Every structure is written in C-alpha cells, then in structure tokens.
Image (cartoon, rainbow, N blue to C red; front, side, top):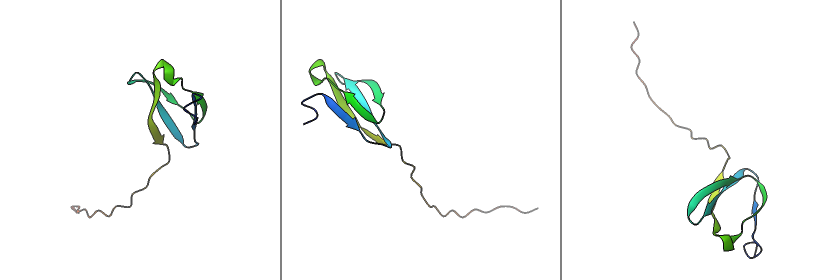
Length: 65
C-alpha cells in the first residue's frame, strides 16, 4: 500500500538501498522517504546495521623459546 503513494518507511537499525532504473542511487536512513516509482525509483533491499557475534574456537600452537 505504501508503494501506491510513493511512501517508504525504513525501520530503526536498518538502511535501505534506493535504485533508479536499476542503477544504485542512494542509501536511505531510518525514517519516512518518498520513492516515486513512476519516475523509475525502486527499493533494492534492506540492510541490517545490527552487530552479529560469532563464537569460534581456534587451537593454535606457539613455539616457546
């Protein structure tokens, strides 16, 4: 429905990628944005800005002199 009125909402801790006729144009910060689809603008996707943590066990050998 938001696309019908050219309004896009970007949630907190995310950014959105804006394209015009398939070419990168801008990164949209959180908030409300106007995205006129009839002028070739479209939303390519969302990107999360949250940190991800991976717990990795790694064995190493060191030489003691």
